[in-house]
Image 1: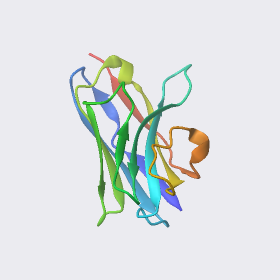
Image 2: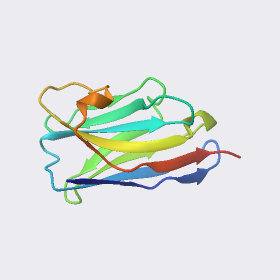
Image 3: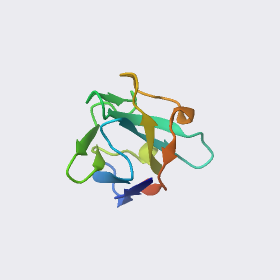
Image 4: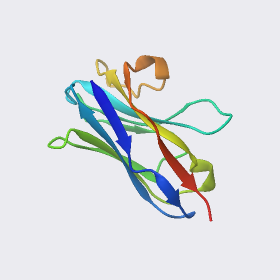
Length: 125
């Protein structure tokens, strides 16, 4: 099983980035894919989840209305579209997979069994 996160970069405040999480070795139909982020000196923070089994989407209050999570079945990829970026969105962003038994957000890192490497997002003028 492999999760490959990509799409990070340097962007000005108000800009956008599309992060990708390419999955191999697992079926996105039975896993929930979560996005987390970690800024220097801070704990890992849950950002969003796409429920593979139920199709539900969940967002942290800090990103609601600005970020959108979606899935491309053909590409076995989950995307996180990030709009109206703010300096406080600067962090390393990770994707992870949780076995999707219940239709819930899976807030906690311990609920995830597979993790991808991170991709750096820097929002700065």
